[in-house]
Amino acid sequence: MRYVLALDQGTTSSRAILFDAEGNIRAQAQREFKQNFPQPGWVEHDPVEIWDTQFAVAQEAIAAAKLQARDIAALAITNQRETTVLWNRKSGAPLAPAIVWQDRRTAAHCERLKQAGQDSLIRAKTGLVLDPYFSATKLAWLLDHVPNARTCANAGELAFGTIDTWLLWQLSEGRLHFTDPTNASRTLLYDISRGQWDEGLLELFDIPASVLPEVRPSSEILGETTRFGSAIPLAGVAGDQQAALFGQACLHPGMAKNTYGTGCFMLLNTGAQLIASTHGLITSSAAVAPGTAKQYALEGSVFVAGAVVQWLRDGLGLIKRSEDIEALAASVPDAGGVYFVPAFTGLGAPHWDPHARASLHGLTRGSTAAHIAKAALESIAFQSAEVLFAMQRDAKIELRELRVDGGATVNNALMQFQADILGVPVLRPRVRETTALGAAYLGGLATGMWHDQSVIANLWQCERVFEPHMSRDEAQSRMTDWDRAVARSKNWQQ
Image (tube, rainbow, N blue to C red; front, side, top):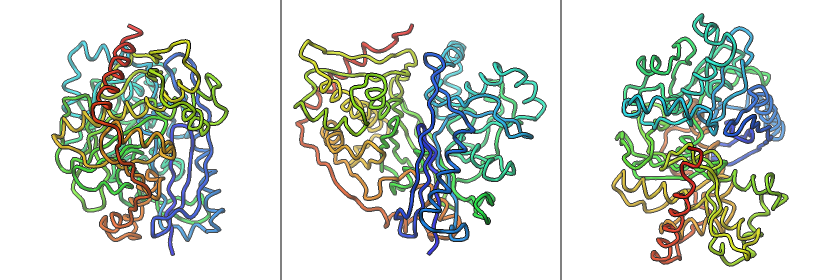
């Protein structure tokens, strides 16, 4: 039996998971790494720490499975998207900390471009809204603020990449400077209809083409790594959310998934149809199997989901462990009229307000830590519901189900509340590590471990279905109150 090693490089931790031919987990390892907040609205990672933790957990997973490199058919990568790294091609050393997707330091740059009327052009080419979330203004900031960076970039001495590109560079010891369409389509520099970097956008953001990686298919043998003793093909690459869409076997138009991680990310497969959203969503390239034509997805990104639980743990000290929130929230029958809008780094879809800030509403003297905990969990479901309702309006379809994955899906109360608010069944798969699984599928398809994507569809299994029980009138009333709370959080810093 051969295996696929999937590297799942996330926002707060690096993981490695070994999958067998049935899509089962054989071994896994995980390490958290430091989150840096040097100024309000700034979020940074150390690229070297990311690589060190990712390489370490890959070694740990291989050792735990008692395997050798020769037993591994492919090494695949899935990654936190938009996070921006700039490094020296010769030394391989980063010029500065990585600017994380959550970072809002370039909000003013985006505002200037909007005032210049560039947002419609950017949206038409990229499918994205003009927001600090994406990579282009982060890269421009690095070029403008790191001493000599722009001079070195113009001389061809620097390389830019999102985290997938950074890991490929390290795994290949500087031989590969590649990305894939799912990651490229999150930079504001990539024309998703033509499938290539756009010269006009590069000029607009003042980005030299010499720093860009080559865009290669998500499922293709890109090269090999010998860092694990003998050669392993580097074969699958996809941004985490498109990888999860693939891992959830949402392979046909009209199928949707939601990932509950640091943020929440809902994607709807729209097939070959590139839908331009009019309801605050974005359009991205979807990961596809070898030989498959380009496909697209509508996406809604919620910036703070699981991160709100981390804040209750680390910022307020209401809980000692993240998993303690379920018991605390369950100790009260409801949130007591409390609504928590966790806009710590602004609001994503469908609002796109970088100036919003977190707020609590409806507090009384009777409000307790348990009410705040319950409101925090409910905020995850409310934000996801906003996105799904926008998706239905854009795609002009009624979703029949929502497939879910990510760490927070272990919380049964949250999943039930999500089904209640949405009014559709929520399906939790047997293998919940669908982001890593999607990357593994892409790697295995490229190396022949799986014949085609119909095999993958047949491997997907449901572990539990959460049916909606709340009346639609009550759900609508709760959403109305949520909308009121969100309105009071907007434009706080303007």
